[in-house]
Image (cartoon, rainbow, N blue to C red):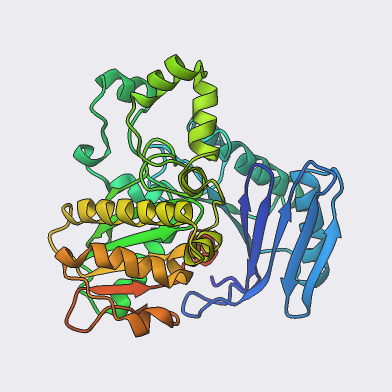
Length: 398
């Protein structure tokens, strides 16, 4: 059976909710995004819902309302112009070890997502809220959970275990999980297709760079290593997150500044990264402009970001038997030419030679290195589209 009516995709955050509606035409066609929107600042007097379709952009106040009201407003909009969706796909950040692929949601899946909530307390509870609210709105419509962590469940124990007491893993689930899996899965697959690589013999590193950043090594279509860990705090320098730090930092700060663990966690997640280094902004666009006008702190933040990223890419390359391509994606990866150039400059040892002209105007799915060097590509991510694809595949036989 081919779904003829639209597929709704939901990404429910702690205070916001993104949604997209795809045509759901058939598995052989490139789904059209019919409608997209964002409900933000939920639960505050400034709560607002905006959406855009072929007729333009519209806005609706949700003053003081939360996720349920936002989803009800979205449902009303869908029912008026598009009808009941054929299926609904949800982005779920953490699936732990319980979910290694996308799944149709039932009571057991809901319990499994809830069991992982302690590993992603800001993300899994809102996802569950969205799932349950839409079950009430559309009780007969199948729903699918697509997990950020699922793509990384192919990591071997040598790649996912921490060198800590073993019972921390066996009893508490302390291990490296990785995130941005849907994005990494999409762009790595696109790189294989674009470069006409052997699906069973290739090595690709994908760098998803936005306010949150991670990089993943993909060997023959399977993730073998990644930079994020138990939580999205580990790994690369990000907008407000520190990335890797010495674990002894916590005890040092607690002693010297009398900070609690909550205080330190808050600082490393929300006051560090590009914002902490620059003292100016977590937005790479702002930092590039400031660095160009002589702001030394902005320049330092950029330099640390690029060096740490290059160092991690070099480490990920060691998990591959060959390196065919590096893919840049995400807001920074797709739009910041100066960042791509600086990172590739650090990676000459791996055979990268940036084509500066191509890098300045890459277009979609563009190669930005010279023909005789290792390939680096810019590929816009399509996480919502991937969620729609998984949702259709899992529900069209129901």
